[in-house]
Image (cartoon, rainbow, N blue to C red; front, side, top):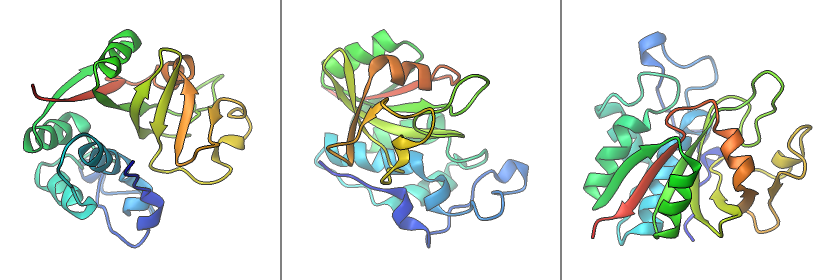
Length: 194
């Protein structure tokens, strides 16, 4: 299983939020803001015979202007990567549609929304993309591009993610759904073209 951790790319610049003056201080790196491109690189490697370098994905994001808001717009970058590597691309807010898609052999990127009143974000305190590889109908198998030891031990996150096989982690579908409930689209769906 191919895994890419954005935290390993502290030295790689990634300009984003350009419509609003650029990234906040200290946030203009791949380590801070390239979760979407990392997820796309992982999906390409794990679903196709192809390979997408992170630097190439960041360059494509800039060329397509997918970096105009905070982080990356997968509404813009997702379809371009899918087309290049022979994948289909759809979006949904429905957990049921996500589960059916995964059961048919597709993969997805979930759009975690982070903290909100009365809720502590499981995968992020702000906004974050995670790659969803599969499900058994109860739990989701996830590659979190910002995984680090102790991440899921924070107050409000304990017991919600099984990281015993890290960097592959598992959470219930209920946890995943709740973590993405304040984002639309909640899930970006990718599958091999038939």
